[in-house]
Image (cartoon, rainbow, N blue to C red):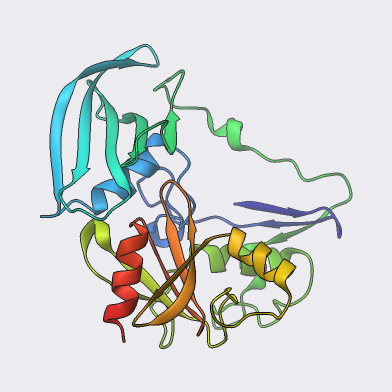
Length: 268
C-alpha cells in the first residue's frame, strides 16, 4: 500500500500479509470500501438473502463478450422500495459480470454496474509499482512501530503518519457503539434509527421558523407527515427514504414512506 501527501511531499509505504485472496487487506480482512464492481454489489445483495427473499435463475445473457446466466433476487416482503436485483454470472468462472437493481416503482435501474470487457489473465506485479516523486520523504510502515510492535503514538500530524492513520481507520471493523444507529425490522424492511440528540427540521405544522418563505422552502424539500410520533419530514429517492422527526430522530431505509411512519409510530 502506497500513500502520497502532495502538500508535504511525503510518502508512506506498507505491506500486508498475503491473505491468499485478491483485494483483501491486512490480516485477510476485506477493505470496507464502497461497492465498485458487479461482484462487490452482488456480495452485498447476497448477504440479504434469507426467508424474506426469492432467488431464481432466469435465463441467460451475453455480457462483455461472455456467456452468462441471470440470477434474479426479489423481496418477498411488501413495503420495500426494491423491485428486483439481476446478476449476470459468468458461465465459466462464476464471476458476476453485471449487477442491476430496479426499484419497485419501475423505470430505469437505480444501480447498473457491468463490465464491457473482461480479461482473466493475471496482471504483472509491475502494474502496481509506484515510484515516489523526486525529493519525497519515504517512510516505511515498520518505521512507525514502537519497540513493542504497537502503532506510532504521533499520528495527528501531516504526512505519512496521518496517511497510515486514515488508511487503518478505513480498514478496521467497527462494533455498534452505545447510542449509535439501531436497526429495526428484518430483511428488506430493515430500517436504521438514529438519535441525533437535537431537533429535526422544522415543518409547517410544528416547529415553524416564523418566516413563511423559509417554511415554504423547507416543506418543498420533502413531504410533511404526522402520526403518534408527532410530525416530521420524509425525504425521498427512488430507492432510499428517510424520515426526520421534529424531535430529532432519523428513520431511513429502502422502504416506503408509509413504512417509515409506521416504524416511527411503533417506536413511541
